[in-house]
Image (tube, rainbow, N blue to C red; front, side, top):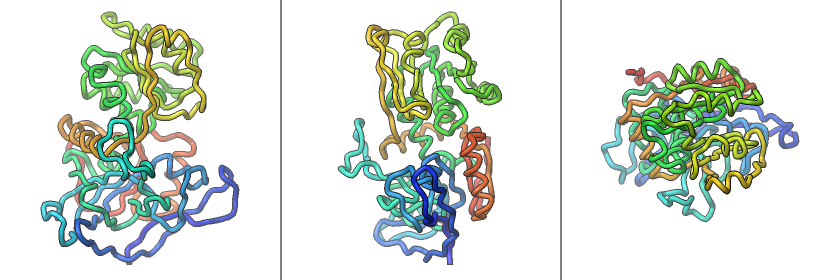
Length: 362
């Protein structure tokens, strides 16, 4: 029987417990109507998967396959599915409930993400996935399986935080964008989107080696945010023809508004997709006087997913993978979770489940 990996229940309090991984046997799915069956080649971790194991995420379900990110080949179709999908290498839309509304999910139940919860009992950390054809996009041809698997949820989150919230006008050549906390999947995707569109991208990190790696990927420069005067050092890096930031894409929170207000142009945008440093963020009068906008951003719609994948394909954009393990090996996969716990990764953490095709053409 096909295999899947979920989490098993043990006693423990939220934030203290660490649910063990479980290798399960599951029936091979049979598609109906417009459903298709995908043979998964690779799947990738997100921070939500670690939060699930720590009981820090809502709707936890035991016995439901983990992970939201995946790439695979369509191997069978329901009777009403379009035959064009047969044999296609595809990436899966990582969630449901949000079609195309610019403001947020249309579904009253909100956005439901694949992997490990009772709200959407399906996930990509298994050999075969049953899903409706409407949730598929062809995988960009230039990406390997590991790279394509790393794309969906972080790519979608970064797309909305950059193109939708900052606006494409702030991503044009000559514009300056700051991406904070470089090294995680969303920050690296945001770097690539802004770079590929022609903007000057600058980064922050507490790790100088990660800054060097970001520069190698196309960032114009970076500063260590552990240094008290990092904002002054960043200002010195900006090009002479534009000595202000046009937008900031932030996943940390904390003092981003107070620091950003000194660096942003009048009317500049701070797009916040996470608050890993602090759940509170003071909004200062200085930001008000400069007409700075702070915009929350999370995940994205089905339309935005389609737009994001099309951009990746058209620009032959890169997707950064930190480490890949092979097979549904619990010890190896636990090692990826340890990377995430320690924040040692630079890019996405990927499990290659099957070997078919998909070598990078970059």
